[in-house]
Amino acid sequence: MERIISTEHIQQIIQDRISNWGFLDGALRLDLSFESNQETVLWLNQLTVLAEKNQHHPNLTINQLNVSVSIFTHDVNGITEKDFVLAEEINNLLENKVWNGI
Image 1 (cartoon, helix red, strand yellow):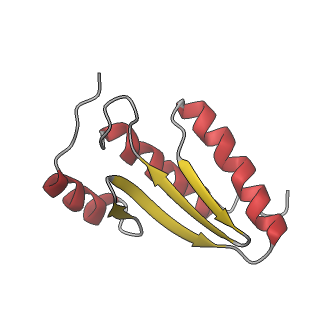
Image 2: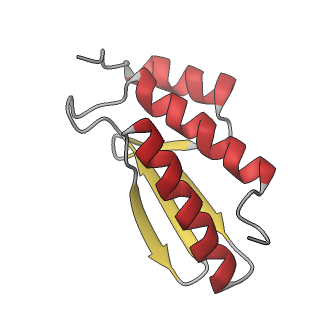
């Protein structure tokens, strides 16, 4: 079973590793805006592949061109290293824009 990370340590890890993310309501959270509906859907498709690969699925809120991604480990109802790994991989997906132009 994954070890829950304390709130204080979560804030430090966010600052060190995923500074574009926040910590809200017990979850790592990232708010995104896309330029078109097609870009949003293409990105979500890539995110789904990434989530399946990691066997770790974020909660998503989708409102037209805006997507909120929330990650926490459901099994322990808290934040674990697994959440930070997925957040870093999501950042890589965003940086590489592999969904754009598919």
